[in-house]
Image (cartoon, rainbow, N blue to C red):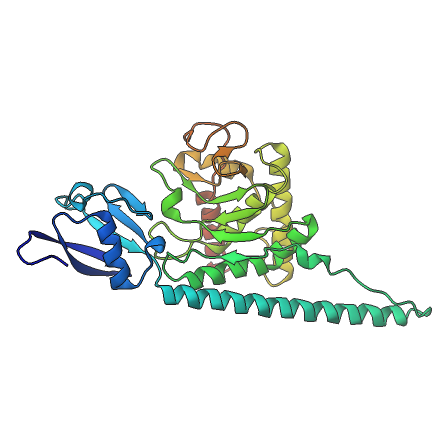
Length: 344
Protein backbone atom coordinates (compact mmCIF):
# COMPACT_ATOMS: atom_id res chain seq x y z
CA UNK A 1 0.00 0.00 0.00
CA UNK A 2 1.10 3.57 -0.58
CA UNK A 3 2.52 5.61 2.34
CA UNK A 4 0.64 8.79 3.39
CA UNK A 5 2.00 11.82 1.62
CA UNK A 6 3.67 9.86 -1.16
CA UNK A 7 2.57 10.02 -4.73
CA UNK A 8 0.74 6.76 -5.48
CA UNK A 9 -0.66 4.91 -8.44
CA UNK A 10 -3.57 2.50 -8.67
CA UNK A 11 -3.16 -0.54 -10.89
CA UNK A 12 -6.03 -2.80 -11.95
CA UNK A 13 -5.00 -6.45 -11.88
CA UNK A 14 -7.34 -8.95 -13.56
CA UNK A 15 -7.62 -12.42 -12.04
CA UNK A 16 -10.26 -15.09 -12.77
CA UNK A 17 -12.30 -12.62 -14.79
CA UNK A 18 -12.43 -9.89 -12.13
CA UNK A 19 -10.55 -6.60 -11.87
CA UNK A 20 -8.84 -5.83 -8.56
CA UNK A 21 -7.52 -2.29 -7.85
CA UNK A 22 -4.18 -2.24 -6.01
CA UNK A 23 -2.36 0.87 -4.76
CA UNK A 24 1.41 1.27 -5.03
CA UNK A 25 3.91 4.06 -4.33
CA UNK A 26 5.35 5.76 -7.39
CA UNK A 27 8.72 4.03 -6.95
CA UNK A 28 7.26 0.50 -6.64
CA UNK A 29 8.96 -2.25 -8.66
CA UNK A 30 7.86 -5.40 -10.43
CA UNK A 31 9.13 -7.33 -7.40
CA UNK A 32 6.86 -5.25 -5.17
CA UNK A 33 3.91 -6.02 -7.43
CA UNK A 34 4.61 -9.77 -7.27
CA UNK A 35 4.93 -9.65 -3.46
CA UNK A 36 1.62 -7.81 -3.15
CA UNK A 37 -0.10 -10.30 -5.44
CA UNK A 38 1.28 -13.19 -3.35
CA UNK A 39 -0.17 -11.77 -0.13
CA UNK A 40 -3.46 -10.68 -1.75
CA UNK A 41 -4.30 -13.79 -3.78
CA UNK A 42 -2.21 -16.37 -1.86
CA UNK A 43 -0.39 -17.32 -5.04
CA UNK A 44 3.34 -18.06 -4.50
CA UNK A 45 5.61 -15.76 -6.48
CA UNK A 46 7.21 -18.71 -8.29
CA UNK A 47 3.75 -19.71 -9.60
CA UNK A 48 2.81 -16.26 -10.82
CA UNK A 49 2.72 -15.21 -14.46
CA UNK A 50 1.76 -11.69 -15.46
CA UNK A 51 0.37 -11.06 -18.93
CA UNK A 52 0.97 -7.36 -19.55
CA UNK A 53 -0.66 -5.85 -22.63
CA UNK A 54 0.19 -4.41 -25.03
CA UNK A 55 3.83 -4.73 -23.94
CA UNK A 56 6.10 -6.18 -22.53
CA UNK A 57 3.89 -9.31 -22.66
CA UNK A 58 4.34 -12.35 -20.43
CA UNK A 59 6.44 -11.88 -17.27
CA UNK A 60 7.28 -14.67 -14.84
CA UNK A 61 9.46 -15.36 -11.81
CA UNK A 62 12.05 -14.38 -10.90
CA UNK A 63 10.73 -10.82 -11.28
CA UNK A 64 13.41 -8.11 -11.64
CA UNK A 65 13.39 -4.95 -9.49
CA UNK A 66 12.29 -2.87 -12.47
CA UNK A 67 10.23 0.25 -11.57
CA UNK A 68 6.60 -0.22 -12.56
CA UNK A 69 6.54 3.28 -14.03
CA UNK A 70 9.10 2.21 -16.65
CA UNK A 71 7.76 -1.21 -17.56
CA UNK A 72 3.99 -0.72 -17.49
CA UNK A 73 2.33 1.13 -20.41
CA UNK A 74 0.05 2.99 -17.99
CA UNK A 75 -0.95 5.61 -20.56
CA UNK A 76 -2.04 3.11 -23.20
CA UNK A 77 -5.82 2.67 -23.60
CA UNK A 78 -5.13 -1.05 -24.15
CA UNK A 79 -3.17 -1.43 -20.91
CA UNK A 80 -4.16 -4.54 -18.94
CA UNK A 81 -2.45 -6.83 -16.42
CA UNK A 82 -3.76 -10.37 -16.11
CA UNK A 83 -2.53 -12.55 -13.24
CA UNK A 84 -2.22 -16.24 -14.09
CA UNK A 85 -1.63 -18.56 -11.19
CA UNK A 86 -3.20 -20.98 -8.76
CA UNK A 87 -3.36 -20.50 -4.98
CA UNK A 88 -1.23 -22.80 -2.84
CA UNK A 89 -4.23 -24.65 -1.44
CA UNK A 90 -5.54 -25.50 -4.91
CA UNK A 91 -2.09 -26.78 -5.91
CA UNK A 92 -1.96 -28.99 -2.80
CA UNK A 93 -5.47 -30.28 -3.52
CA UNK A 94 -4.51 -30.99 -7.12
CA UNK A 95 -1.39 -32.91 -6.10
CA UNK A 96 -3.44 -34.93 -3.62
CA UNK A 97 -6.04 -35.67 -6.27
CA UNK A 98 -3.38 -36.72 -8.78
CA UNK A 99 -1.74 -39.02 -6.23
CA UNK A 100 -5.08 -40.62 -5.36
CA UNK A 101 -5.92 -41.05 -9.04
CA UNK A 102 -2.54 -42.66 -9.69
CA UNK A 103 -2.96 -45.09 -6.77
CA UNK A 104 -6.48 -45.96 -7.89
CA UNK A 105 -5.35 -46.55 -11.49
CA UNK A 106 -2.46 -48.74 -10.33
CA UNK A 107 -4.79 -50.77 -8.12
CA UNK A 108 -7.23 -51.26 -10.98
CA UNK A 109 -4.43 -52.25 -13.36
CA UNK A 110 -3.18 -54.87 -10.91
CA UNK A 111 -6.71 -56.21 -10.43
CA UNK A 112 -7.22 -56.49 -14.20
CA UNK A 113 -3.84 -58.21 -14.61
CA UNK A 114 -4.70 -60.71 -11.85
CA UNK A 115 -8.07 -61.42 -13.45
CA UNK A 116 -6.44 -62.02 -16.85
CA UNK A 117 -3.84 -64.30 -15.28
CA UNK A 118 -6.52 -66.37 -13.53
CA UNK A 119 -8.52 -66.61 -16.75
CA UNK A 120 -5.54 -67.74 -18.82
CA UNK A 121 -4.44 -70.18 -16.12
CA UNK A 122 -7.88 -71.73 -15.95
CA UNK A 123 -8.02 -71.99 -19.76
CA UNK A 124 -4.64 -73.70 -19.80
CA UNK A 125 -5.78 -76.19 -17.16
CA UNK A 126 -8.73 -77.15 -19.33
CA UNK A 127 -6.45 -77.81 -22.30
CA UNK A 128 -6.16 -81.49 -21.39
CA UNK A 129 -2.53 -81.58 -20.23
CA UNK A 130 -2.89 -79.55 -17.08
CA UNK A 131 -0.21 -77.07 -18.10
CA UNK A 132 -0.29 -73.73 -16.25
CA UNK A 133 -0.24 -70.75 -18.59
CA UNK A 134 0.75 -67.27 -17.47
CA UNK A 135 0.66 -63.98 -19.32
CA UNK A 136 2.97 -61.01 -19.41
CA UNK A 137 1.89 -57.80 -17.76
CA UNK A 138 4.40 -55.78 -19.80
CA UNK A 139 1.63 -54.01 -21.73
CA UNK A 140 0.99 -51.94 -18.60
CA UNK A 141 4.35 -50.29 -19.23
CA UNK A 142 3.27 -48.92 -22.60
CA UNK A 143 1.41 -45.82 -21.51
CA UNK A 144 1.92 -42.29 -20.12
CA UNK A 145 3.24 -42.86 -16.61
CA UNK A 146 2.59 -39.37 -15.29
CA UNK A 147 0.08 -36.64 -16.20
CA UNK A 148 0.84 -33.05 -15.34
CA UNK A 149 -1.39 -30.01 -15.90
CA UNK A 150 0.00 -26.50 -15.46
CA UNK A 151 -0.94 -25.34 -11.95
CA UNK A 152 -0.56 -21.63 -12.78
CA UNK A 153 -3.36 -21.77 -15.38
CA UNK A 154 -7.07 -21.70 -14.47
CA UNK A 155 -8.85 -24.97 -13.58
CA UNK A 156 -5.85 -27.33 -13.66
CA UNK A 157 -8.15 -30.18 -12.58
CA UNK A 158 -9.96 -29.92 -15.94
CA UNK A 159 -6.65 -30.20 -17.77
CA UNK A 160 -5.73 -33.23 -15.66
CA UNK A 161 -9.03 -34.88 -16.63
CA UNK A 162 -8.37 -34.04 -20.32
CA UNK A 163 -4.90 -35.61 -20.15
CA UNK A 164 -6.36 -38.70 -18.44
CA UNK A 165 -8.92 -39.01 -21.24
CA UNK A 166 -6.12 -38.99 -23.81
CA UNK A 167 -4.09 -41.55 -21.84
CA UNK A 168 -7.09 -43.86 -21.47
CA UNK A 169 -8.39 -43.40 -25.02
CA UNK A 170 -8.83 -46.95 -26.43
CA UNK A 171 -7.15 -45.97 -29.70
CA UNK A 172 -4.16 -44.31 -28.03
CA UNK A 173 -3.73 -47.24 -25.64
CA UNK A 174 -3.83 -49.74 -28.50
CA UNK A 175 -1.29 -47.79 -30.58
CA UNK A 176 1.11 -47.39 -27.64
CA UNK A 177 1.01 -51.13 -26.94
CA UNK A 178 1.44 -51.97 -30.63
CA UNK A 179 4.53 -49.77 -30.92
CA UNK A 180 5.75 -50.27 -27.34
CA UNK A 181 5.70 -46.57 -26.51
CA UNK A 182 6.43 -45.81 -22.85
CA UNK A 183 6.33 -42.06 -22.12
CA UNK A 184 7.28 -40.83 -18.62
CA UNK A 185 5.32 -37.56 -18.80
CA UNK A 186 2.33 -36.20 -20.72
CA UNK A 187 1.71 -32.55 -19.93
CA UNK A 188 -0.10 -29.52 -21.26
CA UNK A 189 1.51 -26.63 -23.09
CA UNK A 190 1.12 -23.00 -22.09
CA UNK A 191 -0.32 -21.28 -25.20
CA UNK A 192 1.25 -17.92 -24.27
CA UNK A 193 4.75 -19.41 -24.30
CA UNK A 194 4.34 -21.11 -27.69
CA UNK A 195 2.56 -18.44 -29.69
CA UNK A 196 4.23 -15.83 -31.87
CA UNK A 197 2.97 -13.43 -34.50
CA UNK A 198 3.95 -16.09 -37.07
CA UNK A 199 2.96 -19.43 -35.60
CA UNK A 200 1.18 -21.43 -32.89
CA UNK A 201 2.94 -24.61 -31.78
CA UNK A 202 0.46 -27.41 -31.03
CA UNK A 203 2.72 -30.14 -29.65
CA UNK A 204 6.28 -31.03 -28.68
CA UNK A 205 8.12 -34.32 -28.17
CA UNK A 206 11.30 -33.91 -26.17
CA UNK A 207 14.15 -36.42 -26.39
CA UNK A 208 12.18 -39.05 -28.36
CA UNK A 209 9.43 -39.64 -25.84
CA UNK A 210 10.83 -38.34 -22.56
CA UNK A 211 8.12 -35.66 -22.41
CA UNK A 212 5.17 -34.91 -24.70
CA UNK A 213 3.49 -31.50 -24.46
CA UNK A 214 0.11 -30.72 -26.01
CA UNK A 215 -1.73 -27.43 -26.49
CA UNK A 216 -5.03 -28.24 -24.79
CA UNK A 217 -6.42 -24.74 -24.26
CA UNK A 218 -7.57 -21.98 -26.52
CA UNK A 219 -5.24 -19.00 -26.79
CA UNK A 220 -7.46 -16.95 -24.45
CA UNK A 221 -7.41 -19.69 -21.76
CA UNK A 222 -11.24 -19.62 -21.82
CA UNK A 223 -11.85 -23.15 -23.10
CA UNK A 224 -10.39 -26.30 -24.57
CA UNK A 225 -9.69 -27.23 -28.18
CA UNK A 226 -11.41 -30.02 -30.12
CA UNK A 227 -10.58 -33.43 -28.58
CA UNK A 228 -10.12 -35.31 -31.86
CA UNK A 229 -7.79 -32.61 -33.17
CA UNK A 230 -5.65 -32.78 -30.02
CA UNK A 231 -5.62 -36.58 -30.30
CA UNK A 232 -4.39 -36.20 -33.89
CA UNK A 233 -1.56 -34.00 -32.62
CA UNK A 234 -0.72 -36.66 -30.04
CA UNK A 235 -0.42 -39.28 -32.81
CA UNK A 236 2.01 -36.96 -34.56
CA UNK A 237 4.10 -36.52 -31.41
CA UNK A 238 4.13 -40.28 -30.71
CA UNK A 239 5.67 -40.82 -34.14
CA UNK A 240 8.54 -38.56 -33.00
CA UNK A 241 9.41 -41.23 -30.42
CA UNK A 242 10.92 -43.11 -33.38
CA UNK A 243 11.74 -40.50 -36.05
CA UNK A 244 12.88 -36.96 -35.32
CA UNK A 245 12.94 -35.62 -38.86
CA UNK A 246 9.77 -35.04 -40.86
CA UNK A 247 10.83 -37.49 -43.54
CA UNK A 248 8.86 -40.17 -45.37
CA UNK A 249 9.42 -42.74 -42.62
CA UNK A 250 8.00 -40.30 -40.07
CA UNK A 251 4.89 -39.55 -42.14
CA UNK A 252 4.29 -43.24 -42.81
CA UNK A 253 4.48 -44.03 -39.09
CA UNK A 254 2.17 -41.12 -38.25
CA UNK A 255 -0.35 -42.42 -40.77
CA UNK A 256 -0.12 -45.92 -39.31
CA UNK A 257 -0.62 -44.68 -35.73
CA UNK A 258 -3.62 -42.55 -36.69
CA UNK A 259 -5.24 -45.50 -38.50
CA UNK A 260 -4.69 -47.71 -35.46
CA UNK A 261 -6.16 -45.08 -33.15
CA UNK A 262 -9.20 -44.56 -35.35
CA UNK A 263 -9.74 -48.30 -35.78
CA UNK A 264 -9.62 -49.00 -32.04
CA UNK A 265 -11.83 -46.00 -31.30
CA UNK A 266 -14.39 -47.28 -33.82
CA UNK A 267 -14.41 -50.70 -32.14
CA UNK A 268 -15.19 -49.06 -28.79
CA UNK A 269 -18.21 -47.06 -29.90
CA UNK A 270 -16.70 -44.38 -32.13
CA UNK A 271 -17.28 -44.01 -35.85
CA UNK A 272 -14.99 -44.10 -38.83
CA UNK A 273 -14.49 -40.81 -40.60
CA UNK A 274 -15.62 -42.19 -43.96
CA UNK A 275 -15.49 -45.89 -44.68
CA UNK A 276 -11.96 -46.94 -45.60
CA UNK A 277 -10.85 -43.44 -46.56
CA UNK A 278 -7.55 -42.11 -45.29
CA UNK A 279 -7.88 -40.63 -41.80
CA UNK A 280 -4.49 -39.00 -42.26
CA UNK A 281 -3.40 -36.68 -45.01
CA UNK A 282 0.06 -35.10 -44.57
CA UNK A 283 -0.88 -32.51 -47.18
CA UNK A 284 -3.40 -31.04 -44.79
CA UNK A 285 -0.62 -30.21 -42.33
CA UNK A 286 1.56 -28.53 -44.93
CA UNK A 287 -1.44 -26.67 -46.39
CA UNK A 288 -1.84 -24.79 -43.13
CA UNK A 289 1.68 -23.37 -42.97
CA UNK A 290 0.55 -19.94 -44.07
CA UNK A 291 -2.11 -19.97 -41.33
CA UNK A 292 0.52 -20.19 -38.62
CA UNK A 293 -0.65 -23.41 -36.91
CA UNK A 294 2.61 -25.27 -36.34
CA UNK A 295 2.29 -28.87 -35.20
CA UNK A 296 5.83 -28.88 -33.81
CA UNK A 297 9.41 -27.98 -34.68
CA UNK A 298 10.48 -31.58 -35.38
CA UNK A 299 11.56 -33.80 -32.50
CA UNK A 300 13.39 -31.82 -29.84
CA UNK A 301 16.64 -32.92 -28.21
CA UNK A 302 17.36 -31.11 -24.98
CA UNK A 303 15.72 -27.70 -24.80
CA UNK A 304 17.46 -25.44 -27.27
CA UNK A 305 18.23 -27.27 -30.51
CA UNK A 306 15.90 -28.69 -33.14
CA UNK A 307 17.10 -31.80 -34.92
CA UNK A 308 18.21 -31.22 -38.48
CA UNK A 309 20.23 -28.13 -37.64
CA UNK A 310 17.27 -25.75 -37.59
CA UNK A 311 16.93 -23.67 -34.45
CA UNK A 312 13.56 -22.99 -32.86
CA UNK A 313 13.65 -19.35 -33.84
CA UNK A 314 14.30 -19.92 -37.53
CA UNK A 315 10.90 -18.62 -38.61
CA UNK A 316 7.98 -19.96 -40.59
CA UNK A 317 9.87 -20.39 -43.83
CA UNK A 318 12.63 -22.80 -42.70
CA UNK A 319 12.34 -26.52 -43.37
CA UNK A 320 9.20 -28.63 -43.61
CA UNK A 321 7.03 -27.63 -40.62
CA UNK A 322 3.76 -29.46 -40.55
CA UNK A 323 0.77 -27.61 -39.26
CA UNK A 324 -2.27 -28.94 -37.58
CA UNK A 325 -5.67 -28.26 -37.30
CA UNK A 326 -7.67 -25.82 -39.11
CA UNK A 327 -7.93 -28.35 -41.94
CA UNK A 328 -8.50 -31.20 -39.46
CA UNK A 329 -11.01 -29.17 -37.46
CA UNK A 330 -12.79 -28.19 -40.65
CA UNK A 331 -13.04 -31.86 -41.66
CA UNK A 332 -14.41 -32.70 -38.23
CA UNK A 333 -16.93 -29.86 -38.48
CA UNK A 334 -18.09 -30.99 -41.90
CA UNK A 335 -18.41 -34.56 -40.66
CA UNK A 336 -20.56 -33.41 -37.75
CA UNK A 337 -22.77 -31.36 -40.08
CA UNK A 338 -23.19 -34.31 -42.41
CA UNK A 339 -24.33 -36.51 -39.53
CA UNK A 340 -26.96 -33.92 -38.62
CA UNK A 341 -28.39 -33.63 -42.15
CA UNK A 342 -31.66 -35.60 -42.68
CA UNK A 343 -31.50 -38.37 -45.29
CA UNK A 344 -32.57 -37.31 -48.79
